[in-house]
View (cartoon, rainbow, N blue to C red):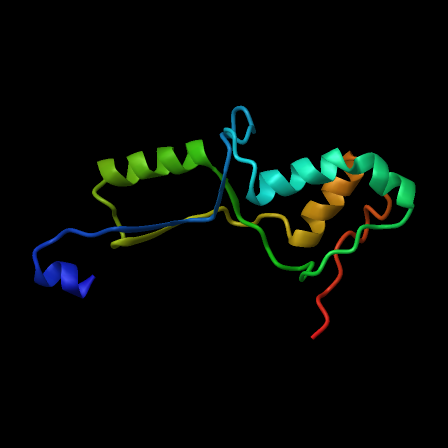
Length: 127
């Protein structure tokens, strides 16, 4: 920011959460990686996962918060910030107050797909 100011450049930093598909459609827009790819693969393997009969165990911290923000909300916030000349400073965090945790998101996915262990879909990574 100092370097931009030194050279007379106007700079803004916008830091969105995890950008996902539009709120209106909840579709991925064609992405087959990241969260959408993971959900697609779990969905594709749901019959095999059910047949195993025990919870899918994943490495990760179940309490880690996820901050999903629909792309159309990001666009609306950017438009609003621009029309108001970015009030409050040059850095803006486009996030939601509270999103689901990794454990909550995985439990919801397991429940929606009727997979075993929907209450404990994530365990902590051993160190």
